[in-house]
Length: 283
Image 1 (cartoon, rainbow, N blue to C red):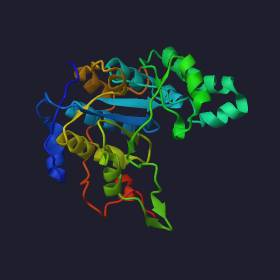
Image 2: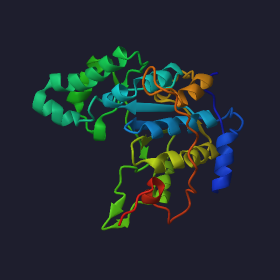
Image 3: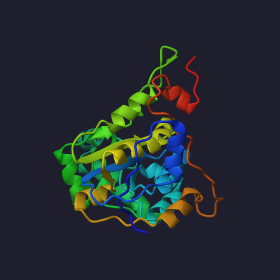
Image 4: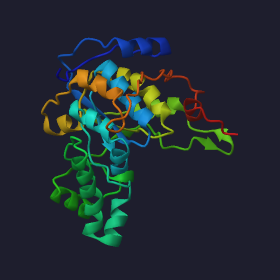
């Protein structure tokens, strides 16, 4: 099936958000604003699967920027995701600062990270797209020139889930999911790229994803992948394959891992915290 424009009515209570997950609404023929939902790193197998599960349930295109370490750890899972047509792009092997790497090791240091990522993807037969995202957003013209020589196009972001923020502070829960939701959806303009992470302590991100999708759709945004936003060429996603990828073994020959959509969070609950979302006690 081909990726297409979809709209959902604004829904702000948890039960309705879950219903929105399970019953995607009709296609829109008029939307001109675009939003690309992107997920970096990939240190958590569970959260990779849950982000994908939400995308499949709502048939919302997403883009992943995993590290090479994640490709090595979950090669079969990433292969299944890429074969479904969901873009997987370069985020270096080790999540290093490329500007620091350039200053210390020169061109070879940057190539080892970006080019090395490509080598890992090819070795594991993981389909990938020729885009890159610098860890920590650290890049300069020198780094960009090297990336371009590898055929890679820079992809940054306009908004984030703020999911790398401090979870606990002075023994108390600190960051709140309502603030994360607000940060992810406060975008203005017609081209929006939202950054989230699929790491061990980003449960809030996958639990808020349904609400973020609902919010952007209610404002008339069309969901696209990063390559589609850049080139204007529609991205083809096979949602049947994507659904199968949700439970694909992490490694070839491994067992399938049944995974369901995460329980949604009420994005307007001003007291709910990152700590609660992750099941963490800050004491």
